[in-house]
Image (tube, rainbow, N blue to C red; front, side, top):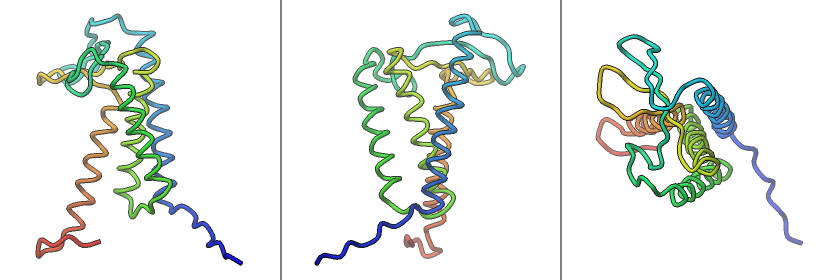
Length: 167
């Protein structure tokens, strides 16, 4: 008779990743819903003087408006990335806070922008930095950038003083 190994429970960091992803999607979609209801298209509204304006725009491209005009292709990419990250979270034991947060932010950001692409054919952006010329962005974009910072922090902590990578 074949014995079946008991399925291990997800680590606290895997559960954290899922909770963070859900929170990011919820906050992102709520903030975009508010922006769609409250902001006139492409008319800046001062929010934090000298730092941040609110300006509703629709981005049919990816980051920095790359691949503009390819919403269905980008929607498919968002779906594949989201599915791959979710499978990773469900199957791989995450190690530490940085990994848990990083995968959660990445999944939440990919899902948040992916939902826009599927529903609207474009991503809703509404946060505009004032002091520098920078593309308008949203909370899903912020989450994706936070994911990169978390992964960089994890990577920098995994390197020993001899430059070798350690688990």
